[in-house]
Image 1 (cartoon, rainbow, N blue to C red):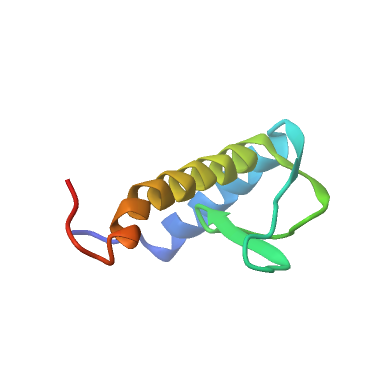
Image 2 (cartoon, rainbow, N blue to C red; image 1 turned 135 degrees about the horizontal axis):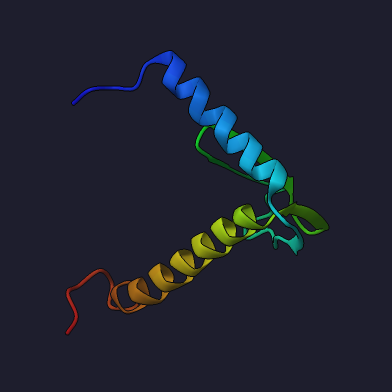
Length: 92
């Protein structure tokens, strides 16, 4: 496996930053799940720290990433619910 060079990594970050600057903006509100004050995540080396519980304007692609992550979290919790209720025993 060949790893990207520092130059290639910098270029990827710059390209991502430029795309995020041009991206349409949307307003989102991230609910804190366990009292978190911020949501943290990133896209190709460009990182975000977004306060929870308040409306925030973000690039649309970031909003889509956050929504996809939330869907995965909810689906995972639903799939684990039966396992947890059975005391960790195999079900079905």
